[in-house]
Image 1: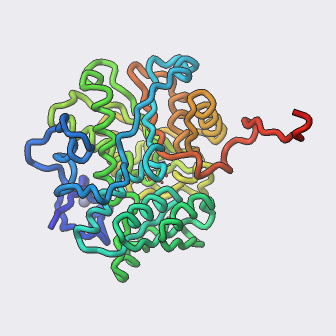
Image 2 (image 1 turned 90 degrees about the vertical axis):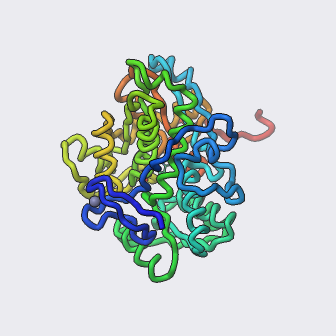
Image 3 (image 1 turned 135 degrees about the vertical axis):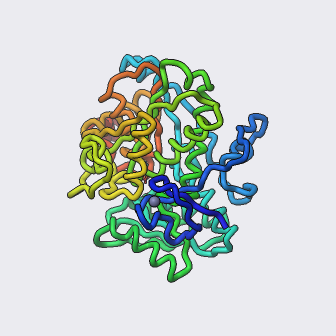
Length: 391
Ligand SMILES: Cc1ncc(COP(=O)(O)O)c(C=O)c1O
Ligand SMILES: [Zn+2]
């Protein structure tokens, strides 16, 4: 049986997929790093073989994969020029099979469900995790139950339901559904692989290793460390990416951590607010309101852990305004050909707010704009109607 660890107290706890939290601190429990000698197997072709020493897969079952990971790190030359940034890059996570980074985590959690002989999985989601979990459940032949917010876009709801998942639109306090889902999971035998699931977080690490490999070790050992801009909601993704670089530092592959910049929308910024106030615990954000629905979590379950890892690694949290999110989304689409979700656009909005760094700036574009087309700024769109005869 796997044991999980709490980074607040250092204690180990037996794996309980229906309650992966420290009973004392409430922090999400994590998979401890293997004590064996670890290295990236650079001659291997799949990410699961390359990063096998860093992942809890024994071994990975390729039959469960939809081709996630291996996404490009693109040079944003036109935007870099406009912003006066020396080196602006984007990790295009929209290229994952269901259009978001979630797939990297879902595949690992689904493999765990199969290993444990669990036939039903579920998730609570603002949309992307719903589609991702439903797709991987379909591939593995598992049943899937998804709870979404009642105002979730139709594209996102259909993207989950099309895979055969049961989708329930939930009215009421969505934040409280997080804990409730684990109780439902325990009574009905459903593995709720939510935002800070320990196996999901392990899967998110793969993007970190890919960035390290693409930039090369030298980029992390000089005086101009990269900055990595990550949109943050529950905190799972940021925690996974930071854990990847902590692994790399531990094995001596890098000398120092990149500077992580966690980004939230100002209309729902509980972690940024705690960071600015030098608080150790994140408080519930009152009356959240932002167009970046995918990162609108007023009470993030990974907030305290993310804060602590950020502070220990010299990172920071910031927040960005609604107009700056719209502008960033439109800039990425019109200058670089990248149509991302408003939740992803916060990364560029933050890079513009902070100004150029000394080293390369990497934006993690977490999800596709195609699932939230109605949120795009209509003012920036040149769409007209004309009769055929008048053309
Ligand atoms: C597009 C997008 N970006 C970022 C996030 C935030 O990820 P996390 O909840 O792991 O912080 C989400 C989560 O739903 C998302 O859908
Ligand atoms: Zn603890």
